[in-house]
Amino acid sequence: MPKLYLKKRRERPVTGGHPWIFSGAIEKTEENTASDPVVDVLDHQGRWLARGLYNPKSQIRVRLLTWEKEAIDAAFFSRRIAAAASLRQRLVSPLTNAYRVVNGEGDLLPGVIVDRYADYLVCQFYTAGIDALKSFFIEALAAELKPKGIYERSEGGVRDEEGLPPAVGVVHGEEPPEPIEIEESGHRFLVDIRGGQKTGFFLDQRDNRALIAALAPGMTILNCFAYTGGFSVYASKAGAKRVVSLDSSRPALDLAGRNLELNGLAAGESDLIRGDAFSFLKNFDEAVDMIVLDPPSLAHRRGDVEAAAGGYKFLNLHGLKVLPRGGLLLTFCCSQHVTVDLFQKIVFGAAVDARRKVQILKRLGPAPDHPVSLHQPEGEYLKGLLLRVLE
Ligand code: SAH
Image 1 (cartoon, rainbow, N blue to C red):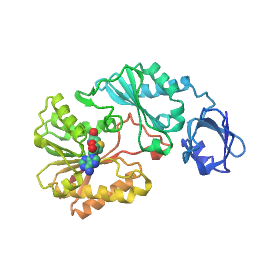
Image 2: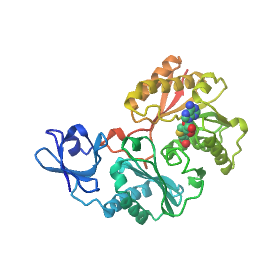
Image 3: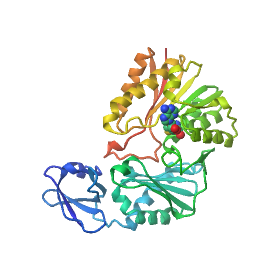
Image 4: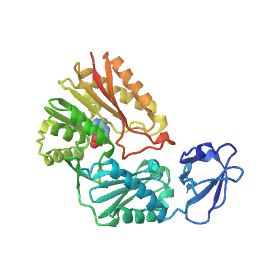
């Protein structure tokens, strides 16, 4: 196995369990003649530290898989997948058949995401290292979880940076239905795994959907960035007086309408609005008791943070302005570059500019089938606040 030597005093993050090694920390690498991307990582004195996947094209040169001298083969992936799957068996209700089975670094499997939708799995490989080993990984996934089929949806930003073309389609078993129907504690949803956002559904918001159900009875709610109606279905089913879903995507809203129907809920024309949430909120002056703001990531790179902060502030300012006393704002940010602290500061700034006094009722994050490594805080992305307007 080729060896990679770190510079002097650059081993601390590795021994501390951080799974990434940046190019600047590397002293030298032995030539790797095989197509196998696995390398051993040693400190500058040649002491063995860890084993991981090497990509000369990425600034993140190595993504560590293990801190033990174990072979990286189908049996390795089987052990990691089995550990991840048994955690979900404890965490996820038997009434829910859609959840994240593997959450990348959070499950010691950097660069790979696996979501379960009923009898099918959808996977995404983000990095060249794991991409080169994906036949092992898929073999292990099929053997451990026995899905009817596995669909690959490897595309998007991070893959471009890694120098990888998109890879999309069935990689094992049967072609999944279009759409797939899933169940989440008594709520039914249609999921478009081929054309939908991410792998098709925002599984990370499951616990926050349960929260809105608890708050919704009798309320009039504006759900901005509604996508396929996750929050809208829960709120309507729980007895909200009215829920208006707003999104810029027509296919997402069509699916939201079908999802409401699937749960025995009627969706009027005026309850599903196609539009831009920024201009809509700026001009919105109807009486509502709660507003949901769940925008897509506004900062894809660190350099975007300032502009993104302006966008988040704008949305929260206009949301807070229009809410009555006692009104609720359920507000999220899913950008990994905006920290929990920064997000709270942005929302504070919005409250000051909106001249409202606001209390925090709850701090929110992703459901626990989306674990984050304590050693890699960059893996944390979804954060939210449940706020109430005092006056
Ligand atoms: N709340 C959803 C997930 C939202 S994902 C859920 O729980 O399932 C973000 C959504 O924002 C996508 O559906 C996308 O179509 C929509 N979107 C992106 N930009 C928008 C804009 N400017 N105005 C309205 N919707 C937008």
